[in-house]
Each structure stands twice: as structure tokens, then as C-alpha cells.
Image (cartoon, rainbow, N blue to C red; front, top):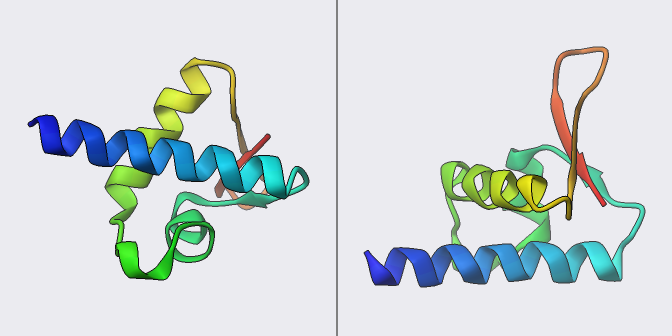
Length: 75
């Protein structure tokens, strides 16, 4: 369990680093898993969604649904 929490913390930190480097970035959880995180991490979308939920609750990312009902995340 501790390894999972550490992995989740690493994903949270990587998302924040990406957002600070690219403040205009907007993407879905799937896009974030594929494009925002290091390719060799192979992070599943569920882990990314958990990280985004944590960041959203902390007010560090914004969650919104577009007209096509896709959930997008941004800074």
C-alpha cells in the first residue's frame, strides 16, 4: 500500500510540474496519462484520475466538462 501511495504522489507531482511548465495545458485524464507523464512510467488512467481528484480537491487543478461531455483538466 505504501508503494501505491508513493507512486500516486509521484504522479501528482509530475502533473503539477507539467502544469507549471505549460500553464495553458488542457487535457483529459487519458491525454494526461499519455502525453504529460514520462513515457516509461506507463501510468494507467485510473491512477491519473485519482491524482487529478486529489489535485482538484486541493484547488490545484480545474475540472470541467466540455460541450461534448469530455472531462478536461487544467491549471
